[in-house]
Amino acid sequence: MIHKLTESVMQMHQEMSVDQMRLYQAFVTKSVEAREAEEALRVAMDQEDGGDTHTSETLCDLRRLLADQNYRL
Image (cartoon, rainbow, N blue to C red; front, side):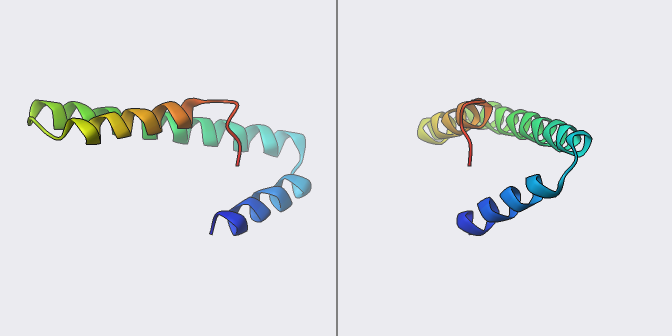
């Protein structure tokens, strides 16, 4: 699935104008920010409920990975 997604994104970038690419970048950035907020909320709720520390740490690690601008598919 990752391979197909990568091919699709590469093809899409070749067909997009600069303005479309900027809008797509803004969309992805906002999507990542929304995901970060969602995961932070889950971590907070999990901690309040005395949840699994490992789960909370894993979600934090994933959030850091998604926020890393050097990470690319």
